[in-house]
Length: 80
Image 1 (cartoon, rainbow, N blue to C red):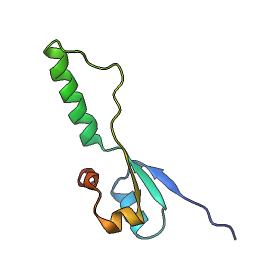
Image 2 (cartoon, rainbow, N blue to C red; image 1 turned 45 degrees about the vertical axis):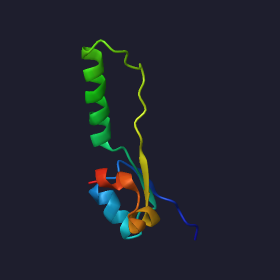
Image 3 (cartoon, one colour; image 1 turned 45 degrees about the horizontal axis):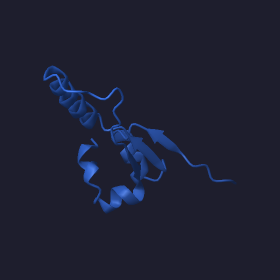
């Protein structure tokens, strides 16, 4: 049979568990803490009359078994 690569979105607790158990190959974690942090920083800028970019990119993290097992990625602290 053929192998199917399974990739999810959100990187939640169930996804992390599934990756560790080998049932899911990867998940893209959207890191809502960083989204909220960036939003608050932009609100502060706007209230201070500073320019705020129309579009703001917030980092994501591709979770794989290797990334989880290594535990060295600093953004893992935001994955719950």
